[in-house]
Image (tube, rainbow, N blue to C red; front, top):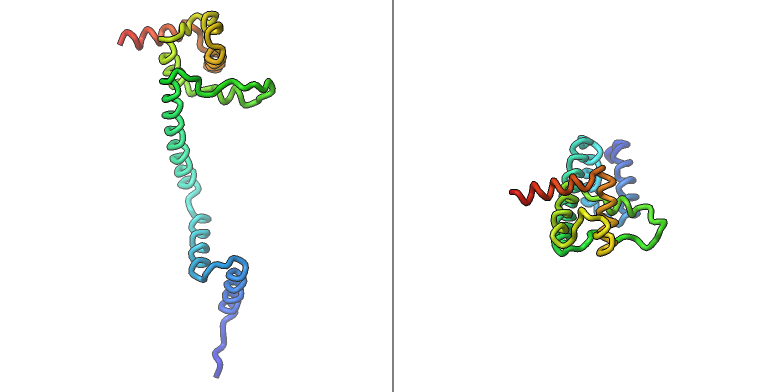
Length: 154
């Protein structure tokens, strides 16, 4: 006597056959992919965001190291664009405040950053870069002088 199959078993076989046909995956791969999908769908959303944040912080640390190495070579991290309509130029040239302060200290020995006219005549790229960050952080030359004085006094 033939055993009666439940409806869900027939449906599962049809779905798995269709999935195998469309994807070329094995039953095991389909099962693992399904399990992973269920795990992802039921994960705590905050966990996923925290993991994303950690990955982003790792990337920020890598980029910070790269920017600092450029600063040590007395190189502007991002060159000003030749395109006058470049909408991302300001955003690209704004550094985190601590990194900008570090940059100013690296350049202070080679250029008189507090004399903007002198700086503008020697290195226009650096001049533009410093002005963008000063304006963004609402800093003035006195703030830079105090910072440089504090660091040199230590």
